[in-house]
Amino acid sequence: MNTLLLDILSQFCYIAHVFDIVFFTTASGRKPVRDFLDEMPDMRAKARLLRLIQRLGKEGFLPEPFTKSIKGSKKLRELRLIYQTNAYRIFYTVAKGKRIVLLHAFMKKTQKTPLKEIKTAEKRMALYLEK
Image (cartoon, rainbow, N blue to C red; front, side, top):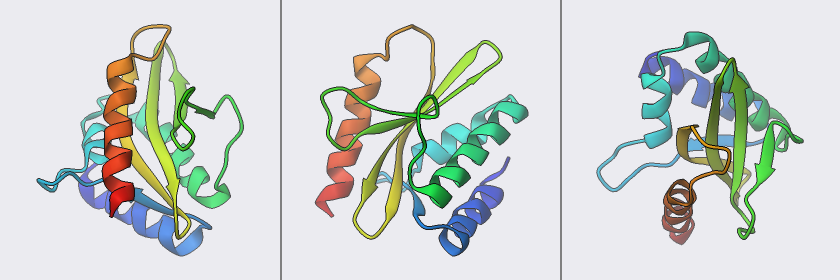
């Protein structure tokens, strides 16, 4: 799926949902979660992740197994998808103004979420919330 379709999804979430979906943007202008989605080779897994994002925007909260809070962090959550043998995660936070900020995405390869991935998401969350 190209960037144009992700922009349309973002706009759709803005118009039709309770929460706005916001892709975290780095200082250089990159949007890491959008880049991750753009580069996903498995179109079916990508479609399922996009539907989960859309549903999250519509409902504002999804129960387990779709989302889970991150231990030790009050505001960081993960959107979860297991598709075939792959586990995908998108870290996000809920910000003021009914915004869900997609911070970091990766394909999980171990049972436990790597601390490096959590730290990346926490750093981006802090940068976003400072604005």
